[in-house]
Length: 137
Image 1: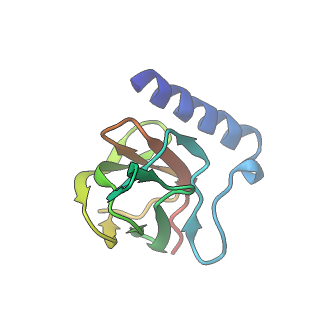
Image 2: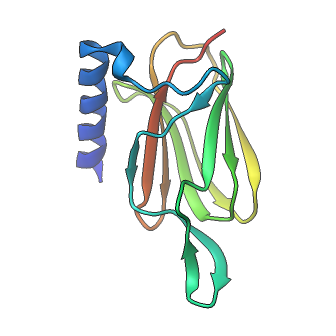
């Protein structure tokens, strides 16, 4: 998984150097678009066939201020890790959460950043989603 993480960071860095417009930074309302998705996040609700696979990501993320991000979990998806780091790998925020119902996770960073940041969300079964964003004042 570490090799995958390093490769993802290198690809993001190369894309940002060659053409900043190629990065999908989300929409005008501050939504962060997850562009690298590997695996399937599943609901922890039981159905007739066990856990149900969700057709889209069961969460969204938004830039709120120049020092904060909000991750909105739309479903109960179990244990996840949320990490925000610089593109060179410096971790600015990391938490392990157990999501048992729809909820909002506010993330406050200690200092504003004028560089691209990476948000990664992983579950204990190996599903992974990431996106890049800028914090704007």
